[in-house]
Length: 165
Image (cartoon, rainbow, N blue to C red):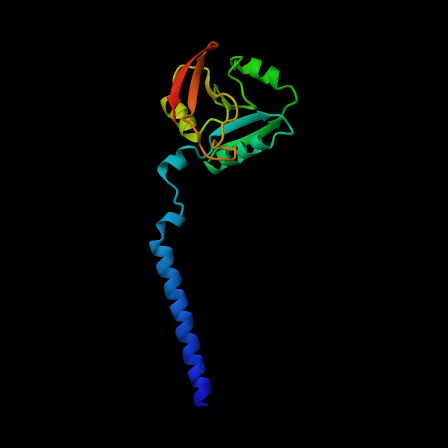
């Protein structure tokens, strides 16, 4: 009888200890807990349409990241991406694999979310922004950032620097 009672007490102590350690870890390990900030909430529900080749996986990765950032993303598979880029005024020589539309702006390629947020916050009188090519470490692209990302802005086909990240 005494042995059974001791086992119960030990079991209860172990359960309490595990719960206490787990609770302490949860409360003190802030680096592992992602919290929603007002910046994340600023993109919640903003509609983004992404036109992409049906076979492009990196474009799906970009769409997934924009969804995680709060955008309401619609992906449109498109076989004639050249026509999409012409329709929205994406400059030749500055194109990438997919074209996103947010409001009246185009967002060409794997543009980091910081640039998209800046665009939507400042609302400049431009046609859109882009990041040519498929740089490693950008949303949807594997690998680490190897160099600064030079995001351009476009007004009627003429480009200039929007920001460097």
